[in-house]
Image (cartoon, rainbow, N blue to C red; front, side):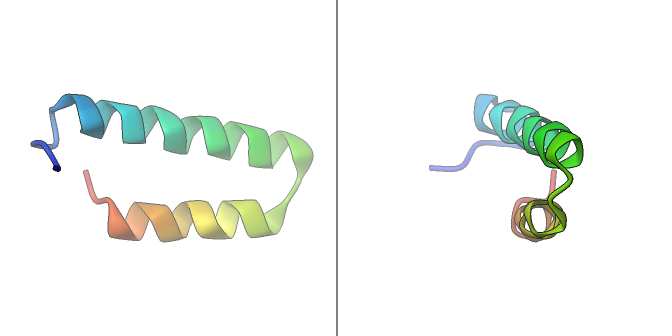
Length: 45
């Protein structure tokens, strides 16, 4: 299911994390940033 860190899934997850961080920072939701960091812990690239 999961590919290597340089695989397609890794790139998609990285883009998703960057997108969520940008949205959460623009909206100003601390909770969104918290669960984004939670995702980072479970998907180390």
